[in-house]
Length: 138
Picture 1 (spheres, helix red, strand yellow):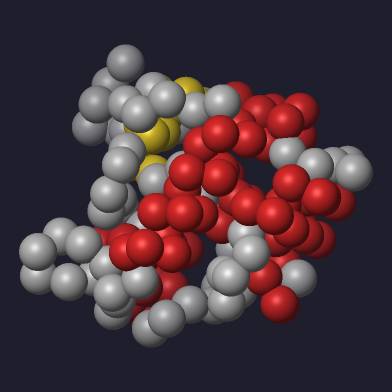
Picture 2 (cartoon, helix red, strand yellow; picture 1 turned 135 degrees about the horizontal axis):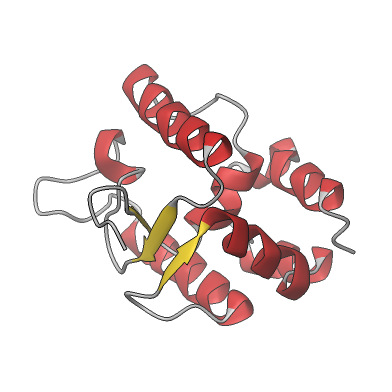
């Protein structure tokens, strides 16, 4: 596996990436996230390593603190734990974007999504739920 191509994701960012619509916390955040989404969509065999803590999506987030944590750390850790459990992800696991989408389709239900993403400020916009329905998740 070519580690220079490997993208690092917190567990909840798999679903965020699936639903990404070009909106975010700041212009640098959106540009960074858009680049990641474009890479994954251009090459579904791109590798993603599950990580605990800040990842490449967090890199340009204005909620990132100097000590490599997040202003919303408690909420983010809860989101990560819920997604990690539902998707059966292990820390440091490496999977392709194609495999990640298969896991989401097979293991995430709309009911699980609503429970796992409770408290996420992006949930109200419906983009993740819409992306799940496009994958035929029920």
